[in-house]
Image 1 (cartoon, rainbow, N blue to C red):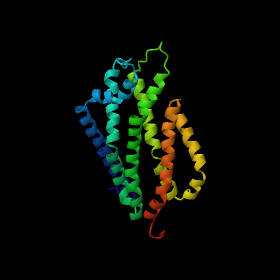
Image 2 (cartoon, rainbow, N blue to C red):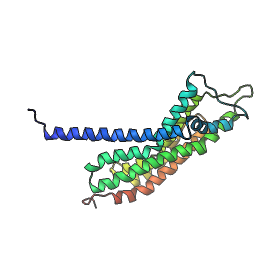
Image 3 (cartoon, rainbow, N blue to C red):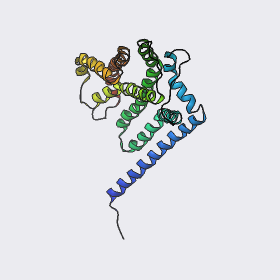
Image 4 (cartoon, rainbow, N blue to C red):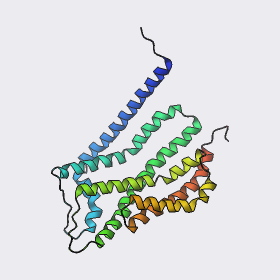
Length: 250
């Protein structure tokens, strides 16, 4: 008869709990994806994603598909990515539910707002990129296209570009969360961050120049929101630190 060490039982139970949370998160994404497949459907979703590019092309122009199965595969990829973004609050909730039992009360006050704000800021970054940046970027690029060239973007290349841009904007919109975490963990003070503000602004433009296409419109569209969000993080961090202090810290 074999005996189980208490520590081993705890470790196994944590693994089982993690598996259950991952399964629930995956089921949530699958349900959202199935709903999007039913309505409005992958084709209409891709048409919506492609709208900024189509609007910048000459009247009657369309995108092209160079792969045999691209007209089927690319809309399916878009649908899956959109499903993950829409299900992100549910995924983060499962993460929160997994780690919450091991946290103190003041730590729960720290984690819960970060989970909510992270998902909201990421979605705001994606929406900002789609509704405010894409139209200006595509119009700016096509404005410099020679008249001897017929612009017919490939749908798969366009998808890669859109996903990379949305991911870049979604990630950079997490700047306030990063600032709050750095201040709350005591790695840097708000006063020190204010001192290095000029370097942060230069860093924002450097990051924007790397992750966006080589044009001024894209760079400024990303760098300016990053600077504003950095200032927002400086304003929110002190209040957040006070609200999440442990009793002995208070």
